[in-house]
Image 1 (spheres, rainbow, N blue to C red):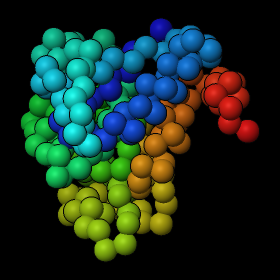
Image 2: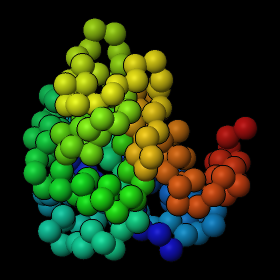
Image 3: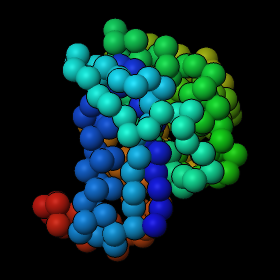
Length: 195
């Protein structure tokens, strides 16, 4: 059984978190049954981007990071204070822990900025939110990252980054493949109705 840490910043985008819960949850019930997901936050109650509340399974100070095999991070909105948690030293320390152990790190959209802030993407390839005239890719490049601007999904060693919420399911399936294998991903996709 593998255990994935779903790291939630205050102001996270609920859809981007839900793809990890769904894909790994479908695998737990209908796939090879080896993936456990634990949501973790730095507050007892988190607000999502669109204004409703979320209670994570655990608090960051309650867990041992070495008990986890992978890290998943959804993005969020500045207007919902996402970057206050996502750019914090505690958040960065979690990211560095997983990268130091060469564990899979799956990030969606602007969650790549938290990775950039932590330093794990220094001189590595990545992407982030890419809507025209939006500053996020330039912001990521200023963090020492080699930003790939024409790809929606960028994998560099153990880390995947993506360019928008539209990529969220692709990121979640990438993570499932890292934790299991490509045939299992095909089986889970088929059970979920993907053709």
